[in-house]
Length: 170
Image 1 (tube, rainbow, N blue to C red):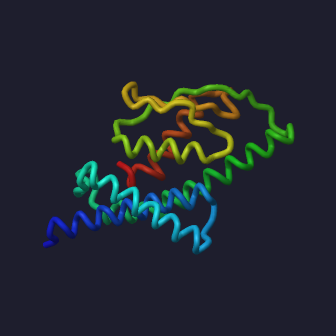
Image 2: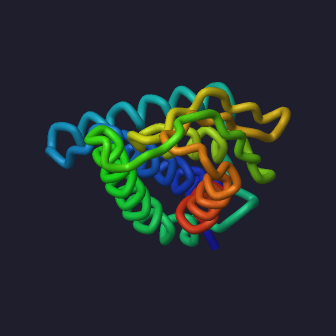
């Protein structure tokens, strides 16, 4: 049986891996220097957060189940960015008629880290800008390149959250 310190170390390592993955996704780079910088910055953030609030095991999901979901999160986010880039390119070339606008997306009952990670994921796609993330009201306000069908935008965002992120950030 693992001791509490082993669980705490594993939890800290998971956080460093997740933060580094997000950092690399934002940079769109796998250069060794960028990886090292991401690990160092993530380690500093996790260490600072431990001083504010001690780490413990996540009650929502075992660490190994969350770790297994990281490749789907990273790969799915890359797919989302590629599809979004294609839509934006078509829009910029006037090959796709759209109506940009604001869409409110409900946030499922999740913790602050999950909502923040979702906001970051959505924000790195070129056809979407996170305008507001309101946990108290349980909503995220997005500016999207095509707001003709707000229900379809909401469904797409919620489906992406469920398929890609929920396992890693419950």
